[in-house]
Length: 198
Image (cartoon, rainbow, N blue to C red; front, top):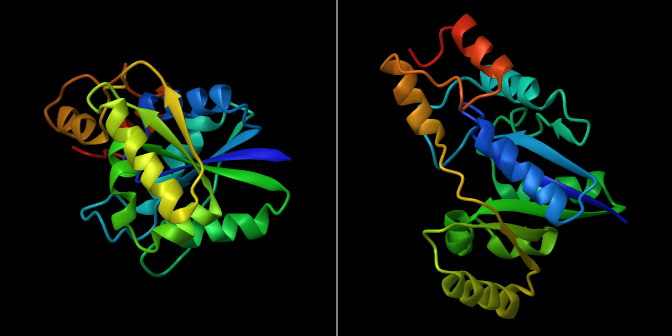
């Protein structure tokens, strides 16, 4: 059975931390592929850069990695985008695969507050990035809750602290600070060309 990782996000902009997380998941879970899915209309965030730019930057960031691809499935929706819809659609598309939903620790701890968490956890196994600022005991207790309530499958990814934030990158660009070490060169060039975040 194929194993496919799903990494969703605003990707505004996509940065090297996102790529590092995908590589960690690819290696630790022996995934065949990681699909990056830029969010469409998000009910959680406002003031998001146009989806055409975010999709283009994501494509540029992953184009040199054969195990990475990008999907526009959420962008094509004309309504609020929910993770349960995306994961259920992916299950229909990849009937022969096991789906792993890659999330950070903060998202993992709050996932039971998302829309239809049970459907999310039935549609995919969770791959959770363990962060230094979140206790593993807290994460383990939450995983046990999800297993008991939703029969969830939870896997923890261990990695060095990835301390890169899209929000900080946008602030740095606005302030004229260098972000060249935080982005793929092609993404950095795209941002300069299209004068984003200035």
